[in-house]
Length: 196
Image (cartoon, rainbow, N blue to C red):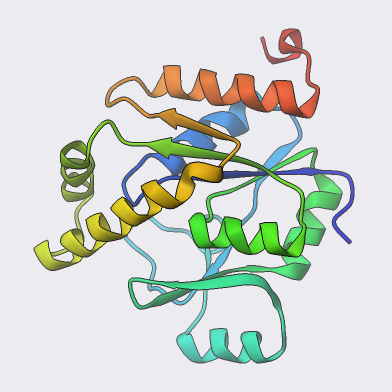
């Protein structure tokens, strides 16, 4: 199980920039892909099935848990999120680098199972800047934003065991992406010249 590719975890608090960073990395690294995870949360405006997530109902998710279809799963803000074993296996067979944006608990679950990966955590400059990013994104009320920030504080502490932690400075996404790309190139044995 899980041959060929290298799994790269990019985590951040909600609003921390993981999607933007992964989208940029996919353009830098040839033969790379995003691992599409499964969720019971409803799609946000602009979300695409099979691109952002596989969207299923809570009942379907619970059925898949019973059938042991998930490598790991978590509940975040009352919604289920998980990595389906078959999808990870399929993606790692096809691509050299496979990116996933699972959160800290998910990373720790993979650690417990002995599944090899490179983990990178994107830190916000401050919780105030993080709050502003979440507010700008829209779709959440004040109480939900407060809840996300409580989770973010806990995750920042729990992310101490990631391979790398990078501060994602507001307005300097290119710098963040370059730092992360350099860490990946070093760890995946990729010559930097190949990336130019």
